[in-house]
Length: 274
Image 1 (cartoon, rainbow, N blue to C red):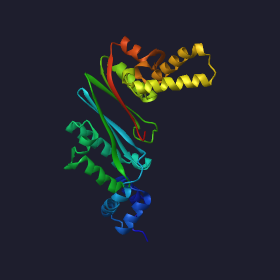
Image 2 (cartoon, rainbow, N blue to C red; image 1 turned 180 degrees about the vertical axis):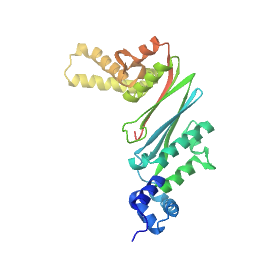
Image 3 (cartoon, one colour; image 1 turned 120 degrees about the horizontal axis):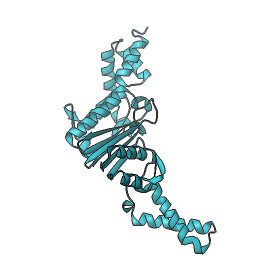
Image 4 (cartoon, helix red, strand yellow; image 1 turned 30 degrees about the vertical axis):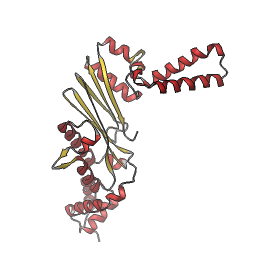
């Protein structure tokens, strides 16, 4: 007969983030001692590290920090949404973000090497993965700097931690910059200005537009205008400054910024698993 209760299983799940059956097995082995069961989950998890290496991590969370004129954004990934919303995993994301700010780490390599509670961020993640029982990884780290930075985090589900994160580096009106950050979260531009799109990409879009127009039987005399219109459509879809502003689609993002006397110098957008 089991010498623990359903409440004990629940408590161990909340403490460890591990699955119900794993918690029950650990409690069976530990004769109902929650602390001993917790350690058993850690040990079993560490033994399984190599088995987790090839697993996909399509869930997780994003965390942002702003320190002075520098913003940091991270994506901490895991295998399941159950772990993504576990208190231990969420706390780990917060601790990693703080460690990255303290170290001034602006890329993935330096972030993984940053100190965290007497070990590296990389080791801390592996230790937590051992407890959680599934693969966890710091997938991406980004940083932007300017006079000021706005950070916006968006929840795609009320039951999950933030899944979309945006940083906007700017000089000017903070409210406008925040509105632009919300816009970026919703419309996912790929670049700030068209200058960042390579000439090869533009030529490819132009060629596709021309071939498509010809296949549609468009008149030869109108091809040039049609092609340019479609290439400009590509820019409008991908370039932040040329997109229709989310709060007023009669204005471009550039126009909104100009009216507010605000300049955006850079942005970063992460979506978990994307």
